[in-house]
Length: 303
Image: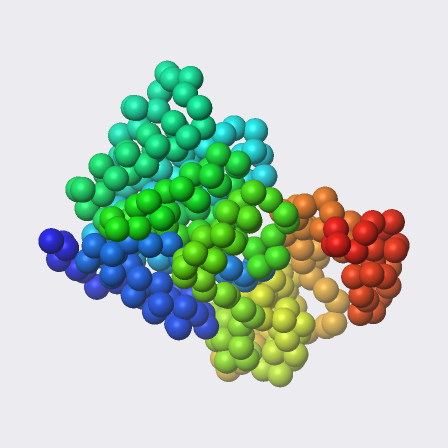
């Protein structure tokens, strides 16, 4: 039986109504006992993490338990970390993982025990397991996803995996690709459209943006993270003037806080991706992969 449902809080996302509707529909199916896997794909800064937060909040409203996690590039040093970090954080009730302790079993033994623990858990109610940046999943977590997603498909367990649109070559990326090939749902997050950009500007500035604001905002190419950082930096440096509810930009200099925001996003890229960006900055124009490869002394297939 599904618990009584309270009205969901109003979404803070902009321009993602269709994607949220799709995800909320999958949550309702899981609340009714239908499991499965959905992959959220998009470039850095496009809003995947914020959407995951919104989905988790809605899942709790629907009566699902939620196990939220995030993989990182360092997870490769600790087998099963990417998945266990999510499962151990399950709310409102914990997952019993005692069977995984103090044993020197092989890799599949740990995957089997984790599968049994999750299968037992969902006998008490549906569960949403969330792994952000799943392309960084360690090798054993990637194997567990490959094995457990199809094995537990008939249970009320919903997997929600977020990854970059062009992630680095990794076991996590390969595992997710295989899940999609085998039928996992995939939702692509693209750039915000003009209406959504206009609304985001209005929300951040607390005023209607004029042509000067929208012209600069267009340079963000619909990336909500960069747009928010850019607009916030303009406000902090006093380059936004608001009169009669209309916001306009003063001056043409880039705000001082913008480079640090961009640097923050670059730190999440692989070394080869950063090298590609450095090479691209030399051209100061559109360039091909083959041109960058020649400059870096690498095969084009590496890029």
